Image (cartoon, rainbow, N blue to C red; front, top):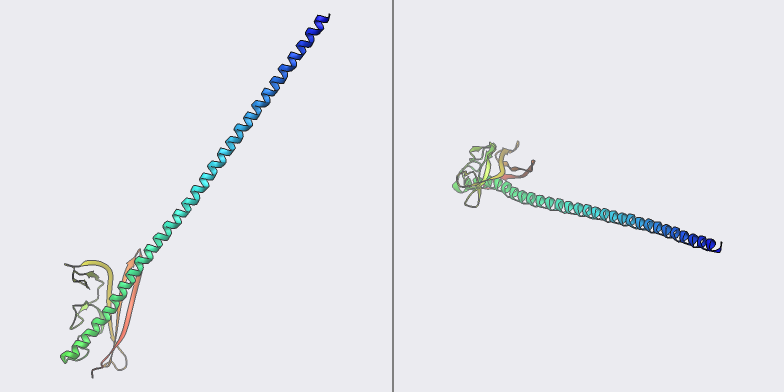
Length: 202
């Protein structure tokens, strides 16, 4: 009887040990699962950070590219405006040179300066004779702008020289204007210079 009781006690102790071991093993597995889930969450958060960082860098690069493109466009347009201003001023000077040549030659001061719209370059010294028809100016090998298509390089500029006389005192005043126009990136631009020419000599 005592032996049976002792065996039952031993068996009971063994069962309790096994139960406790299984319970602790289950908890360990549960903790391991939680650690894996936590690691996965941390990994996902890191990927999100990378995506955000790449997005910020992309936006920054696009902004820099837009600034550089805008700066280049502004610089190019400024250079074209400077050239156009020079060409417009030259157009009026051509008319003034014809007037001055008339004085030196003893001719009528406004000879060769007729009312109308004209094309002329630095070679024009005696009269305005070529009607304006929208021809492009060429940068010639001489370093000047003209209409020599054989030796020059085509540009984007057109120049229209307009001459008219005043309604009062027509013999003493000539209104000369020079308009240089060009297109850039689908947009039209122009620069205009105007001047009154008088018969100071007489």
